[in-house]
Each structure stands twice: as C-alpha cells, then as structure tokens.
Length: 572
Image 1: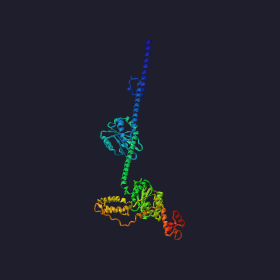
Image 2: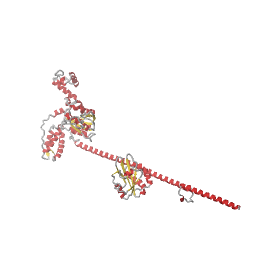
Image 3: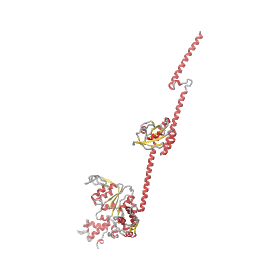
Image 4: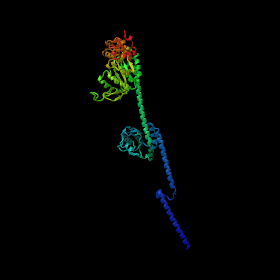
C-alpha cells in the first residue's frame, strides 16, 4: 500500500512538470512569433537562434547593395563632370548610362524660366525634330510640377509629336525626371522603355543621385556652345574686317580711297592723311575749289577708328544764315516760329563719328564763337534750350578761302582759326600736278562711258596734249565735267575733240603767292604796313595810321617795334 502511494506521488509531480513545460513552450512561441513570422510557418525542429542570424545577413546584403549604388553614382558623376559638348555627352549616355539602365531611348528637354516654350536639347532617337514646344503640353510641365518620377502612357494621342513618333517605334512606357533648376535653366529627362519593369527602384535612386551633376553638365554644355557660337561670330567678323582691309589696300594701291594721282604732291597728301587718320585731331583741308577736299575727308574717316559709323557732312555755304545754327546744334520745340518739334543737330548726329564742315570760311561770325565752344569744351546747346549737351565728334573742316586773310580782315575769328588749324592739309591745284591728268582723264572716261553706255576707249594724242597744257581753273571737278561732256559728243571710239573753257586764268605764280600760307604776325605786319603807306608814313595825328587802325598811337608804335617794322619799310 505504501509503495502505491509513492508511485502515485511521483506520477503527479511528473504530470505537473510536463504541464509547466508545455506552458513555457507556448509562451515562448507566442513571444517569438510576435517579433518574427506567423506561428504556422515555424517548424518546431528549427533551433530558435537561427532567425536573428538571417536578419543580420539581409541587412548586410542591403548595405552592400547601397554601397554598389553609391559607387555607380560616383562613377557616373565623374564621367559627366568631364563632359563639355554634345559629342562627349552622347558617349556617356550611350555608354555607362545605357549599360546600367537599359533604356531604349533618352531625351533631354530644356527651357528657361522666362520662356513659355521648351526645346529638345538632346535625343538618342533618330529623326527627332529639335523644335520648340509649349511648356504646358501636359508632358514637360507634368515633370517640372512633380517632385517624383512621372510615368507616362505613350498611347495617349494628346502627347507631343516627338512622343507619338517614339510610340510608333514600339516604345510604350516613359519616365520623366525633373532635374534641379540652375540659374533659371530647367531640364527634364525622359527615359523610354519597351518594358516598364526595366526601370527599377534601384534605377530611380541612382538617377536621383546623379540629377544635380546631370543639370550642371547640361548647363556647361549650353555655356560652351554659346561660347563657341560667339567665337564663330568673332571669326566671321575678323574675316570681314580682314577682307575689308584687303579691299582698302587694293583700293589704296589703285586710287587711295578715291584720290587719283601718283605725283609727288599727291603722295605727300596721302602721307599726311595716313599720319592723322588714326588720331582724333581736328583737320583743316585747304585748297582751291574742285581739288577734292571732300575726298580727302572721306579718306581720313575711312582710315579712322570710327570708319564703321557714317560721316556727317555739312556745307556751311548752302545753309541760310538764319537756319545754320539750328542745323548744326539742333533746336527745342517752340524755339522759334515753325519749330513744331525738337530737332537733333548735326553734331549730335555725328556722335562717336566724324563731322565734315565744308566751306567753313562761309560760317557767319556770330556762329564761329559757338563752334569754338564745341572745339574747346566738347559741348553744344540747342537753340531755345538751356542745357549743355556733351558731344564726341571729330571735326574735319575744309575751305577754299585764305583764312589768314579772312582773319586779318576780321571776317574770321583768329581763336577759331588756331583751333581748326591743328593739322592743315594743303591740296595742290591740278595745274601744279599735270602728270596726274592722264590717269584722272582715263578714270573719268571709264566711269562716265559706262553710265552712258558708250564704248569709248581713250583720247587722241592731240586732246591729251591739250588737256595737259590747260590751266584748269576748276581743277579736278572741271576736268571730270569736261570728260563727261566730251563722251556725250564723241562719235567714235576715241575722244578727238574737247572744247576748253575760255576763262582768263591768272598766272600760276600769282596764284601760288595768293595761296601761300602766312603766319598771323606776318599778316598783321603786312596790314599795318599797308595802312601806314596809305597814311604817307604818318603814325599819330588825325590823319595817322593809329586812327585808321583804331589804336592809340603809343600802342601802335609798341606793336610796330615787336613786329620789327622800321621807317625804311614804309618810307620810299
């Protein structure tokens, strides 16, 4: 009986222990399943420590994959950073990018923030028209308005024509990626696939990683292209300038910018032109009528640094005195009767260029002071205005008058004369360079024969001999008119007759003496001597030279001493 009691006690303890063990297993399984996988998937025979090891392996595997992605991003960025043109960009697209992302086609669309259109900057697709498209076409703007990658169904008939063309080639899926905006430049990358699954999450992460470098590269290409375009334009300009210089050199060798003549006198004039052309100095051209003063002014302008600007020409003798001030300096609205609106004068029109004042000796005395102000202060004042206007115009003046004589007779201001006479160029009369007459005659013959349609080949020996012997008071202009007239009357292939002018010509020595340039002191001395001789050598008194000259006798005597005038100079 005692033994049965002991066995029963042992059995009960065993059953109690067995129940505790089962409860512990259930509790453990419940806690384990809470943090791992469903209960149904746990095989009881697998050890409990095996699952944490698998989780760590998965984490390590993911880290390795991300590290590979970063290495790929760095490699692509390194390749893109070296790209400077579309050819190099195409190599990267068709190389490392296509190898890793397996896209079928690759397009970059670009736009500026200030524009309402975008254009296709780059495309791997063939026969794609790189024209402009509206930004709000539902394709470009969908990408720029989204922070995520946008997926497109290419079967949509509302897509732009270049998308429809790609769809016809069998591409059904596209992804649009908006790249970071740099300096107002917006770019969208479009990738096209036949199978949408080709573009994975990993591809998405890599493109996000290279997006900034891709934007920088695209901008670098655009800037490089702009620089190349500018350099090409500069090369074209250089070629144009070079060709113009060649044309100028050819023209110079033939007729020196329209100036015909190879005589020593004309060679000296050409040398003077070359010396002064590049400067901004005022030039005074002196010579008889018809000697070619305007041609000299044109040559100086064409050889100057402002030859690309138009030269403004003013003939001071052809403008009425009451209008010449308005013509030169302009006028304000209402400045005088008939001034219905503001007018810009010739000096303002010649800004940063050249103004040619022909027949400067005819300029009214009251306007000479205003012209002097332009020369000294580089500023003008419009008629009826009270505001000084700065002007920057080079002045070339010309006259057929003896300005020294005009100064002595008080018809021309001496201070203006000195300002104009910075660099004088004296043109010889045609009678003083007769060796140039044959060249001039044949030049005018060719010029006017072509206009009239006549085939005239030259002059007879007799006509040429007479032309060389003629005095030509009208100089080159008269010669040209005479040749043109002879062409009209010519009946054969040569001009055999020429009717010369019957105007009496003053002896050339007298003309040369008249044209001789004298200093102001010489002119003043000559004038005082003439007055003293007229007064029979009397200096002071009612009938003396001082009264006629409007000077005190003491002042006149002092002036005579300075000029070296002695009694023997005016007493016979």
